[in-house]
Structure formats: structure tokens, C-alpha cells
Length: 304
Image (cartoon, rainbow, N blue to C red; front, side, top):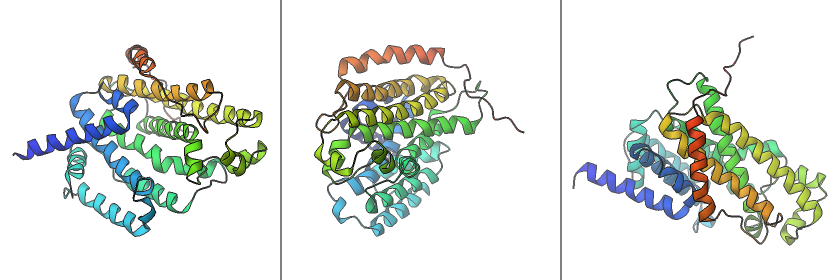
């Protein structure tokens, strides 16, 4: 077997993992060019494995030292010394695209936070956590997606929009998984905002949908949508081949928020999801938006 065959096998396996664990995201990747698709699968699988360290079956046995070893292994794959086939796929990806190691290290930092923290006192704290575990994914992906050659926007503003998409996705995950997280003793909601709404941890553990809860959730959903709006401004600046898949995944993810509303804000006992028919109906809409793409919505920063 040649090195190329082994690498292709590694990428295919990454695609299978992605298809199994991130159906909505996987659908978006199928719209990408084959090279980009493989690179994004490799990044996804590394992120998933990192997340599994603190959320997976072995999570109770994970120590800060284990995360240090994982970070060391990350450095080695960036230097072209992968440990296993998944590492080999990512190692190949980072050799082909100008991907920076820092967002990957930051994601590991988010896992360190998860080991010792199960409450967030305000949105600033929660935002930092969302950056570490999901905003980083946006920063990892832009070099693979590519920025349109005709884009007038600054690189920084495109990265900021990608960061906003990562934050929006994570806030959506948090709102979808309130009940699931509560059963694990975790509450990823700003404590000060819960207090202002007249709610306590106890209310979340009891899992009753009350008028107070509905009002609180409306505010949280509104904020997540604001981050999606911010992210949308950057999609037009991506290269032609990447606009459609990114629009598709953005629209699909946004629909999870609609689903929470449709469930009358019961994210304690019902899991908000987007059905297949709805997912496929989003693809032509995303395609239309991608074709409209090109026009710069991100202003270049002015120098005063």
C-alpha cells in the first residue's frame, strides 16, 4: 500500500466519523470540493476527539496531564510526526493549508476549563468558553475555505465573522442541550442572567417550562441569532467553492433555534432537531445566497 492509499483511507475514515456524529455538518461538507472536504473532516475529527477527552466514556479518568500529553501530540503532528491515522490526515491537511496551531491549543485550553468548571457567572465567562471550544473551529476552517480573491474585506474581519459563527453554533448547542447537561450536573448559562430572570440552578434541575423560563430563553435565542447575523456578513467574502456549504451549515444550525421555539422552549425533555425534509429544503436557499455572495458586507477598518 502506498502512502497515498493510506492517507486516502485515513481521510475516508474521518468522513465516516463526521457522517456518524455530525449529520448536519456532514451534509454541508458534501457540497465542498473534494480536497477541502477531506481537510475539514480531518479538522472535525481532531476537534471531536479533543472534546471526547472530557465528554466521552473515559472522561471521569481524564486528568490535566492527559490534556498536556494531547497538546504535545498536537505539536508533533504539526511537525509531521503523526501518532495514528487520524493524526496523519490532520498532519497532511496542515501541510497543505496555512492553518495555525494556536486555535487547536486554545481548544485544548477549553477542555481544561471543562474539567474544573460547571458554572459560568456571566456572559463574558461563557463567551470565553465558547471561543475556546467552538470559535476556534471557525479560525481553523478559514484557511481551508479560502477568502475570495475579489474580497475587499480585511482578513481580520473575515476571521471575526468565522469566530462569530463558531460562537453562534456553540450557543445553539448549549440551548439545545440544557436538559442533557443538567443531568450531568452542568449549567452552561450565565448565572447572573438566570438570577435576573428569577431562576435558579434548582429550576433547571427540576426542568419545568414556566413563563420565567420562556422569557429567559427568548433572550438567549435572540443573542445566538445576533452572532449568526454577524457570521453571515463574512460568508460572502469566502471563495466561491466554499460559500454554499458554509451558508448551508449556517442555515441548518440556525433552524435548531426555531425548533426550540416550536417545542415551546422545552429543552429539558425534548431535543430540538431539524428533520431531513427541512434540511434538504435549506440547500437551494443556501445556494441562492451563495450565488448572491461576492458583494462585500464587511467594512474595511478605518484608521483614525
